[in-house]
Amino acid sequence: MHTLYASPFSCSFAVHLVLRQQGIPHELKWVDRGEGRLIRQADLGRINPFRKVPTLTLPDGEVTTEVSSILLSFDPRPRSPTQIRQHQAWLSVVATELHKPLLAPAFDAQCPEGVWQDALERLIPHTLGVIDAHLEDRETLLADPEPSPADAYLFWALTLLRYRWPERLSANLARFHAAYGARPWTGPTLAIEQAARIARSG
Image 1 (cartoon, rainbow, N blue to C red):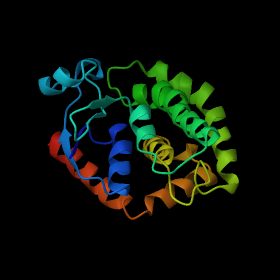
Image 2: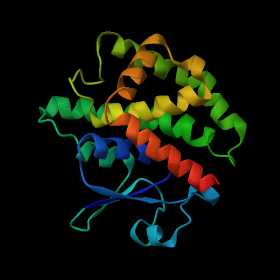
Image 3: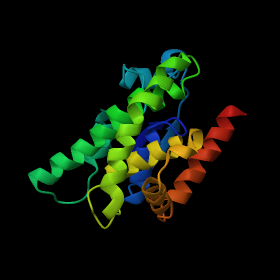
C-alpha cells in the first residue's frame, strides 16, 4: 500500500486526488506544518529530510518527494515523448508560476504580505491569462478525455485561488474548476481533506 504524508489542502491534496482517481490503495498520514513551513512530526523528518509534503512511500518502501515528480510518475496514459514533455511543462507551470510565487507565501501566516501581494498584482495575471486562453477550447490541459495529474495540480491551485481571490477566476478557469470538481473522486477527496482540516484545527 502507498502511504501519503499530507497536510489538509496543501499541495499534497493534488496527489491525494490522483490516488483516489486511479483507485490506488493508500494510507493517509496527516502531519502538521510548523516554523518555516516544515513538518513537525519527527517520523517524516527521518524519511524526508526536507520535512515537506507531499511525501509518498511506495509499497516497496521507496520514498518519493516533490509534488511535480510524484504526479508525473502517476500519469496512466501512454504518451509520445512530445506529450510527456507537455505534461511535465504544465506541472512545472503550476509549480513555478502559481504554487511557489503566490500560493505558498499567501497561505503562510509568517510571510510578509508584500511578498505574495507583488506576485498577485504583477506576475499572476499573465500566468492566469495564458492558462485561460489554453483552456478556451479544451476540457483538460492536455486535451485528454480524463484529467491528467497536471489537471489535479491545477485544480488544487485554483481551489486555493477561488477561496482567497474568487474574482481572479475567469469564466474558462471557473468552468475547468467546476468540471474537475464534478468528477466522481473529487467530492469524496474534498470531504476527507475538510474533515482532516477541521479535526486538526479543533
